[in-house]
Image (tube, rainbow, N blue to C red; front, side, top):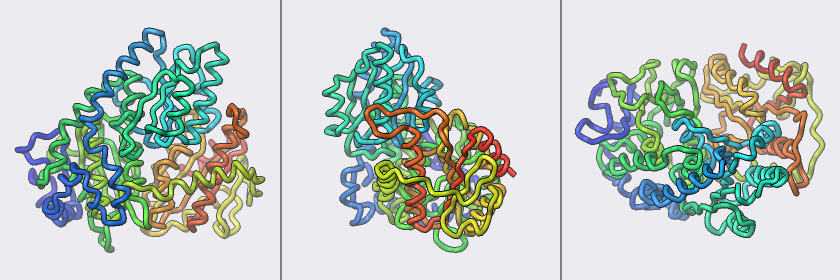
Length: 559
């Protein structure tokens, strides 16, 4: 098959399609040729629809048997639409038109994409940075908060709920009338919310993991209350659901899963880096949502797919390595003849379609890729380790370890032996990058205010060019519920740059013996500790002068 020919486009012309998947490059086409017929013969698509837990091997059966509820969400979530829209109308009638979402990971990433794409306002509070929390505590007279936690015990979300409840009360507002809860039935949060008499409680399906929950109450409640057309979102998913369940070679989920999970690398094995670039897809922030889905689903047992969100002009897109699959997110309606061509990548795929359809497509493709890789796509064995380490830091409150060096407004710390005498930020970064293996990646982990200090994210593309390797950029603690799983459980080829800062104006957490500043510091320290225990090289740069230190750091990393 030649690149870009009509036969390379799935679904085929005679299949009604709401999404299109176009493989390109010899290695992507090899993956399709090698795996597609077997996936069809093994009836993988229809067995996913039938919720067959044996698809991922005997070891995965226990977990998979209670994690496949997402396949029918286009239908099973329909009853949510009316009560969500009714609640929105009630709130608007009361002058409450500002929605703040307190949630992490799967509870926040999907609503953020849904509302941004719909062009409606939703304040997503998925941080413990004191400045970012304080910035959300405004305009309380017109604010309702959605507290989303599958387990009901998410530390960040509980802390955010506490401070909003106190703020409402101090402002003379009946707090319970302004709190909406989304959680699994029987969770501690559900029980506490019932006792407190909160405005509304929406139960989510316990057979759906957080990263597959976009079309559940976790995605729909905050998005619908903010004004997104959630009925249309479900229509979009329904439009592609039949195709995704068919055991045919035109199934776009099978094709996409084959490309991302089975494209061969010249040195052997498969291409384990998946770089996403958006070419005007019209879906805002889709890469951040799919990043969690793929990283947390596949990054374990020393293998998996590392998702990387990049710009179309970034070096890891235009000159990708031989371990990379480039995913081009294209506008709805584009086809093989108009698909973007950013490079001569040996493995690439162009995907387009409306948001609801793409969410279901990528969930299918991810579990198909998991089958090809040989892992259980429904567990996340390494996520809890960083949480436990953070709790340990909060309990023990150890004194900060002394900095190995100070350069301007930045303290320098690192795993033992990494710095090799480096005393400047530039030299320390060079020492970290010297540890980067040929098939490795750099992870930048910024425990800062992702809204007020967003300019730091610009260094990602510069670092990708400088290193000629894929670079991930994550805001902490947000990424701990996403790529954090891959960092510990995936292939041990990463090097890690952690950025933290002093909080000039800390914020107390009601009825808790620690502040938001102490919490985010504990989360950063805990994560660094767990990475070091996994023999990952970590460079920790702490900004003692937040403004000057940030400017200094951006200058060094952007060279």
